[in-house]
Structures are given as structure tokens and as C-alpha cells.
Image (cartoon, rainbow, N blue to C red):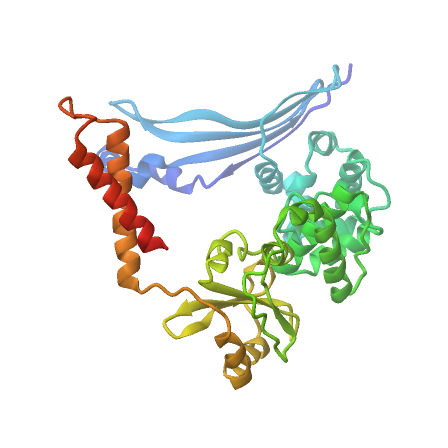
Length: 414
């Protein structure tokens, strides 16, 4: 049988260690024990072998150690990939894909991978076990074939390999995997290009739309305009939360519903507040519904100059500005800020807002409420689980004090 042997190896960052061993022993001692970082010194070896039976890649770490009499390097196998040619099986692989790609790039034999990696033409995720096996065996010798082989293993067809690499480098949401894009969109390549050209906020919305489409067994067109994408997002959001919406009350909070001559509306029922929070993906419902219900906060939904939610808090003189956000708590534009300033300084708007009831509690009273609630809660816990052996359940003074605290608390809150 003809022997087939190819070997390649490369030491990484070994200059400091080599220089250390060239020092006199006394200087080694001073340098080692007076410099903490030196105790972490070492060197790494990346070794590739393609032998008659096995093909392997391994990363070996050598750490500088002291025996008490001399210094030495202790070996540790950090990562290894081993393929058995006779069994046609990957025997062992504990490599992280990022580390595996870096190690391949250090070896002169695979300089072609390094050149493509430096240009972002290859991505660590495509280095599956089967791909690495074929690279080590010399069956894969260019990036296009590497990516195509990996994509083929995902059972997704008609994928442009360059678009796929661009998508991988720009992707902020790893859960937007290729299979989901294939199932939820009309054009997988257009979907990948959309993601590659989108910022974090646009990707987050696209992520939500894709998973909504998956949940509803629908397909979306990644070539839709931004406006159409927003419309479809809202439509699917409403469809998915229809059962939740129907459970929310439609009783108006404010009887004197204000009429604004602006592209906005007051969120005046639990259902409206809930729907706004779902559509805008922010916390207007989860964090502010109780305050809105208690007439301590207002939510106003604007449709122009962009879709945003305005929050007004209660002050001594009525409702005043608190915050305004786009979808996903993104900041509003300057145009929207100008709109809010005009809106809140409009005398007609002030007249409408002044018609609304509000529940303002001064800070001093709020502090008293918190103090009484804390005092009552502590007493209640003691009453339920007394620690004092001399505690008398029939002590009328103790029971009376608890009832007084409870009544005071009720009066303050109401």
C-alpha cells in the first residue's frame, strides 16, 4: 500500500517563551515570580496531518511551568479534529468553528482560506464536520465549493452563495436561520440581501415578521416597501393576538373623550393600550397600564410624521410630557419632536386635556403610602408567623393597631 503522508505545523506567539528560556536561571526566577502575567506565558502549536489512515487538525497549548528546580512547558491538547479514512467516520471533533477557521488560516497550506477570510468571503459557520473533513483531504480547494457544500447539507435550494456569506456577516439575529427564511419568504436570496442591507432595528422587525409568518403558515415578500412591510406586520400582529385582544376590556377610562385636530388618538381602553404595546413592541401596556387605568398617565398614538407613542404623566397642573418612542423603543425623529412641541403648546389641545380627570398624589403623600404599606406588610408577616414565644393571639391592643394601620393604608390609597 502506498504511504500517503502530508504534515504541516505552525507555532503561534512563541517568541516571548523562547526568549525566556535563553535567560540565566536567576533572571528566569525574578522574571517569572515578579511578573504575574508571565505565569500565563506559553506557546501554541497548530498541527495538520493527512496520513495513510487518518486526517487530523489539532491545537496544542504549551504553558510555562516551574517544577521547583527548573522551568518547562506543559502540553495540553486544546482542540482536535480526527477523521478515520478506513471507517469513513469523524472520530473526534471538539473544535469551536471560529477557532478551527483561525487555525486553518495559520497554516501555509491553507493560505487560500486566509486570503478569502480576510475579504469576508468565507464565514466560520460553514465549517461543519463534513466540510472540514473534505478540506483536510484536499477535496475542497475554494470558498465557493465550501459554502455550496454546507448549504446543500441544510436542504435549502437555489441559494446564492455570495448572498449567503453577506447575510451571515450582517446578521444580528442568529435565530433567522436559512431554513426559516426559505419557509417564510417568497425569495430566499432577496430575504438575505434585505437582512444584509438592514440596520439592527430593521432586522429586528424583519425577524418578528418572519416568525409571525411561520406561526400563521404564510409567506412574506422581502421586496415589499417599508410601508407595506409595516402594514403586513401590524396585520399579522393583530391576527396573532386576536384572542388576547378579545379578553381585554373596552370600557372607556375617560368619559370626556378628547377630539384632537392632529394625526393621533387617545388610548382610552385596556384593549387599545394592549394593542398599541403589541404593535409597537414596547412597554406601554406592561409597565403603564395600571397608571393609565388609575388616571395617572396617558398614552397617545400618533400616525404622523411617523408611527410613535406619546406618554404623558400626571403633574400638579395636569398631564405633561414624559416620553415618546417609535417601535422597539427607538428614538423619534426631530420632525416628531417638533410635532409634539406644537401639539402640547396648542391651546385647543390644552383645553381637551384639561377636560380629562387625573389623579395626582404629591411626593410626600406617596412616601407616606410606601411607609404605611411597608409597616403593614411587616406586621402582617409577624401576625401570621410570630417568632415571639410570649405572643398572645388575643392581645386586643395588637390587633387594634393592625386594623388602624390597614384602615389608614386604605384611606391613603383611595
